[in-house]
Length: 407
Image (cartoon, rainbow, N blue to C red):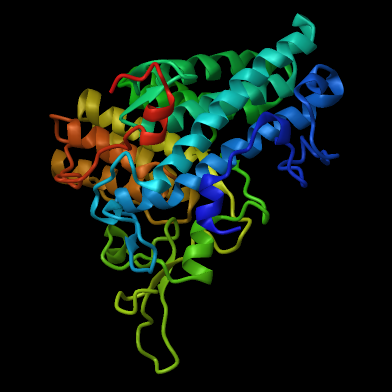
């Protein structure tokens, strides 16, 4: 399936079940199309939650390229017509935007609607300790986080235009609901995923005390992935390994060729010269974070939680010793040498920003960081977005089809 076709694909609730399951917990096979009426029994629950997971992964996969270009993580050196997106200008009629928006909104709706269905199928006691219910809330939380972090404003189920911050409240509530259910189910992995997701949203909402407290509950080596299978296909892998469309050349990571968190290499042609992108001119520096079609994308990590605590230390008390303690604890997870404590608070902020850039590289996270740092009046300011889009607009297709939209 081409990237263009995938972005325009509409997957309804009746076709949620993929041919292969996405996790060991949800190891089910799809018998084909499932009608909505057939989802009202316990046998349907594994497939329903697999569908939620699949849609969330698809939403992440569909946003990888736009996010990487807008946030300057990758440089466009290929043949695709992305209009002005590589230059940081995104318009509501850009065709790729509608696919990214549709998949993210679908992931949110499928998870939120699925929670209601699970509450109808299960007794209250069963629901309160069901790992499926915990996962449903977690998927709803991450889908809302994606929408709130990447779009300037939003729409909920055909309603009027609302602030993007509405998704932060929905995400925080979903993660909060997931925690006691996951605890009752004895699923520490889901408990950690919920605390990590809630900490991410609290950062976006500016609630640093709560974010640091939640982050402290997550183990350093924890990782919660959006699973990508070969049918879905990791798009950044395809466009950098099967096609030379995007390059690390001329990005902030070009100056860091040996960082294990953000691996890349220079490609060479048959003559030993630096290979060129699909446009025939741009040097091809290949990202190697995603090395095959089924490379998963991290939704949250324990190392990010340490960086949240580091940023909180800088923000609340300018405690550089504590901040570097957390940063170096995160670096140790990757086998990296510790950083010396900076001589100034401005240098400490520069180190913190780079640590987040490298740790969350190509995970649809950098634009949200640039957006909040760009708006910050303190020492964490960042001018990378000067003259560039700070978020995605609501696509024109939504505006035209939604009678309640007033934009």
